[in-house]
Image (cartoon, rainbow, N blue to C red):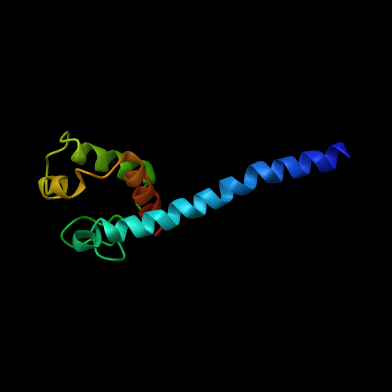
Length: 103
């Protein structure tokens, strides 16, 4: 009985985490489109005016996003991106970074 209870308890804890990961990826895809990222990075995130984002490390992409948004990175074409991302929250940026890392 204890084993059954432990397995059921673990499933109840793990199931929402699995769904939340899928939800974050779906949110990231929707946010990527809604925030206009494809305008410079293309729909497949392979780069155009802006650099390729597809397959980049999630943590690196998120860090660069925040640096540009917060005005701490001004090199290259980051000035163009700063205006586009100034209202994107940390949570939205994380979802986008997770999405493009998986492409």
